[in-house]
Length: 125
Length: 179
Image 1 (tube, chains in turn red, orange):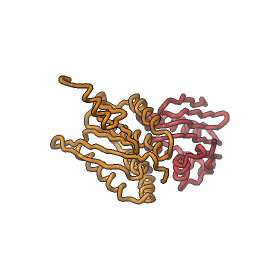
Image 2 (cartoon, one colour):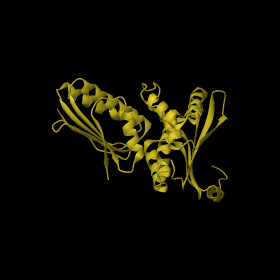
Image 3 (tube, one colour):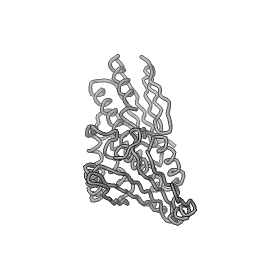
Image 4 (tube, chains in turn brown, red):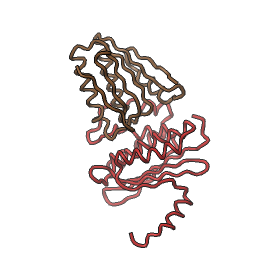
């Protein structure tokens, strides 16, 4: 299983999905021209990862800003992970926000609503 | 461009305290560059830094929904100004009347909603499947109202029987530290 590495840009986050360490990270700012198109490889990779027997995933979201169309994609990723968790896969989600960034923290809280997957809000300096 | 007097234009921009004015197709590159100006000028208090989020949603509204396009990218106008007390961002574009009605209905609904209700609308709309004819989530306008604490106004102008021009203006007070 290949890792999924996408370099970050000004308006797209860095993607670092490691099939060996089972740590998946999305870091940076997200306001691409076309969020559906940008996030598609991520959904495809996740589907493959779980199909290939991926039994664990630690998911770190470390976003500083995201627009509304990205928020929709993020929510869809969370739904995929929640579904996998409910089917017995060991999943941990860490939603990281800069200490005084209430907006990102609040989004993290809001996105967690209705999910059963272990989900932690983590602040950093 | 005949009889264009750049000095007049300069004086007008100066008296209106305009930092930048852009008219044309909004590409991703242009959005990023103009976004840089907005975020550089508005760094500081949280309310003011939310102007960047407002800018992105407004600029992408033009990109996605303008009826005037160049190579698939929506075209419109973005004007950003800074006075002593506040920042103002105005965006305008031609829009089909069908889309206009939906958009103004969304603005009116979100302006009437209390912060809690608005949050609820946003989270419900976010969970709906994507709109067929759009690259956006169709919820940017709710986010703009939320991030600007309702300091938004719009004006429409008829351009022909099927289209209108919509101008959306958002103000942010510089000193505003309260939520």
